[in-house]
Image 1: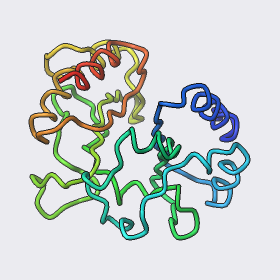
Image 2: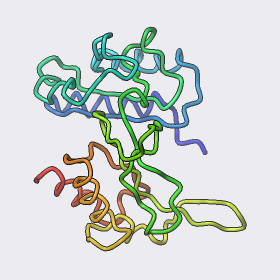
Image 3: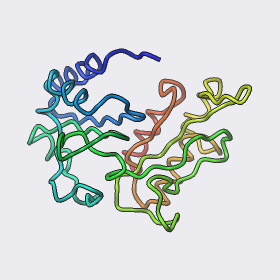
Image 4: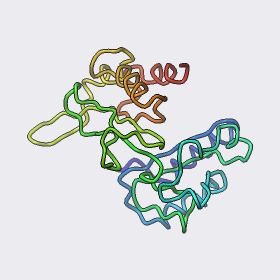
Length: 210
């Protein structure tokens, strides 16, 4: 599927950051295919390389803990207001503002086909003790698949329930509150399908309010 060029999407991000100088944006690119040089050129041509956050070299390779991250106010004051993670292909010694996802973030399981399967346990990267909650940014996967003739695809017909703000099993609100309790802090990111369906933003506002 062709969702358009990377540069076109990055220009939208650049316009948003220029128009909103007190906002910080995080991008996560998964299943990345193009060579790193292509990504670097896209950021350079849009000017986003100059707005991107670069962690200290000593914090690469998994040494960046939660307390090491700058605050939003710090990022605004230094005008490093874009954080970009790549799930593969990153090399921070060459392009220091394209961060290797698994050195900074843990995520929950995915490939869920039943609403009662959502978990808060870290699934990637894998740890010896599955109950261990690392001092890293957390990404909670909350999307549902369906199957047809052995092929798995996003379950669009159930999206309003999947992304609901309620507290029933399978709803985003319940999953978010449960993970906040497990982590003893708010999850940093939720990865959703069909985010315009349901009450995803209400859940986000609730997480930020308490």
